Amino acid sequence: MKEAAQGTALPEKRLHKWITRALDGGEVEVRSAVPIGDVTHSVMVELRALGIKSTEVCAAGLGYADELARSPEIAIGMRFDETYSFQGGRLRIGTGRQPIGPDKAEYWERGPDGRNRRKPIRMAVWTGRRHELHVVQYGGEVERLLSIFRQFQIRETTHGVICTPRNAKETIFYEGPTAIFGIPQLGILEVEQFTKQVARALPGHRGTPVAGGDLYAGQMASGDNYYLLRSRNAKVTLVPDARPQVLAQALETLQVDWRAGR
Image (cartoon, rainbow, N blue to C red; front, side, top):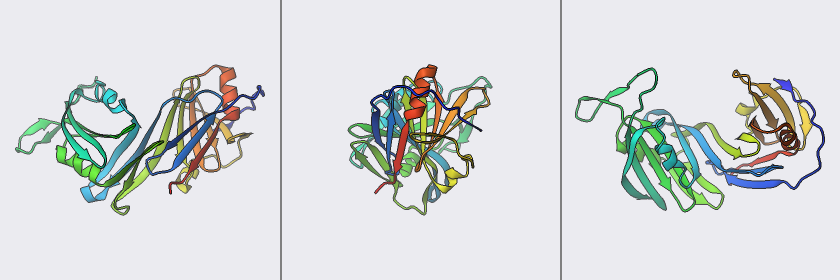
């Protein structure tokens, strides 16, 4: 990874601000010279009490999970035919068929009746007043999804939904949480809290000083450029899709704070 080149100073503009709650209750504040769009959240979780090594819990605004459920890349014919009242919201369980990719691979499992079957795709969506949580599972029964949601205490706030483990020794956040912002004039912004684990993946040298911290530039395997901003409490990765002048203005003024939940 190389140090980012110093951009040309542009006239100062009013910064747009967005505050959101991470899944662990942390408060993430982004200030940008260009308007900020929607945000989604995710965290990878190990559920030891259920024998689940890894599953992803995601959060977003209303309607995001239903749109995802209609994607043929996720499932075919997903139908939400079970609904429960759950922790102040509504929990829906959907089932669909696995999509067959270009490799024509199919995945099978033994069903409750002892017969082999293609693995169903199941999705659970918790819906509050303004936000949603969802989990996707490949195979297994509905009860497994219900058990996953029982491992968490869910609380909706003005700025997002918080999903904390009921037992921190049995339910472990091992990667994330992460907040992903779509910034229409800029690109995709991925934000993680600055921890010892995150720090080990960051450059050991100083980057270009900007308003939000140290800025670095790098290149992905695809050849596309990306930028890394290290603030005092967050790691920010930007995959840009912007005109050079807009990108320069954004990189010089972008500021991100991640304040731990209370």
